[in-house]
Amino acid sequence: MTSPVTVIGLGPMGATMARTFLKNGHPTTVWNRTASKAASLVEEGATLAPTAAEALAASELVVVSQTDYKAMYESLDGADLEGRVIVNLSSGSPGELRRASAWASERGGVLLTGGIMVPPPGIGQPGAYVFYSGPEQTLDPHREALGELGDVTFVGEDPGLAMLYYQSQLYLFWSTMTAYMHAVALLGTAGVSAQEFRPFAASLLVALGGDGPMGFVKHITEEIEAGVYSGEDNTLHMQAVGADHVVEAAREAGIDVANPTALRDLFWRAVDAGHGEDGLSAVIEAVRRR
Image 1 (tube, one colour):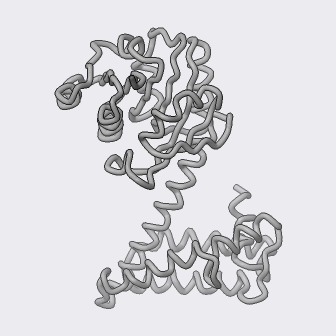
Image 2 (cartoon, helix red, strand yellow):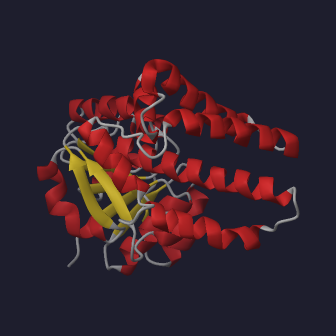
Image 3 (cartoon, helix red, strand yellow):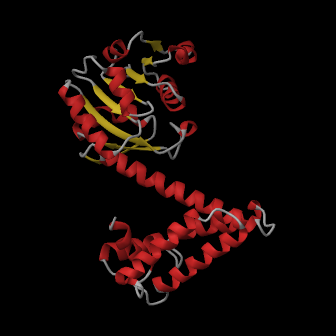
């Protein structure tokens, strides 16, 4: 028989996780501050606990998916965490997750922190993965169950690490997608449709992650690791001047200039710090200096 699981928090993410556990044969107990959200899951076989404390008592493995860590504190206030493995997939700051780990430990439980890297429809589907951090010996007995949500990617004992990975990936995703929107808006002022531009954007994104001449993720990674920022072919000063032109083009087109300006200013800060003759990877030095 598969192990019982409790899911606390039944928003789109939590409800999908509970449904995934049910489909894989786990006796699944659920609890939500708004109990009516559990109705469809109960029809599918889940057990609705009247209180969070009773939901905790039903399973050793307790998966939390709420708005933030404050919601966990409020929901589990006064509940007995003894012997419970709390897997919190909510969002928060890395420091907050470290404090939450201590909070759970003081109450007899163990906290595993996580960041799930797909939207709700992707949970349990090929390509889904979840960053986890905390005590690996606590994670190991539950790898199979948690693996039903997505590949278990353990990143370290530090409870804040999972969120650092999660937020780094989100920042990369958001900034890339908003840059694409800026590009679409800029071209749109000249009557170019998003569909006309999309193949060029897609091919660039694929190339950036590859090993060819345009594989800048690989090239920049190697230069950052080595601390050597080659500007032989294209200096950062040249690119900062080019960023000036991007800002001016956006201003002439009448679209938002805040993000292009922030990027341009970052380039110039690196140039002003003495990296004008280095390559693009030297911008990491400006990023590291708040």
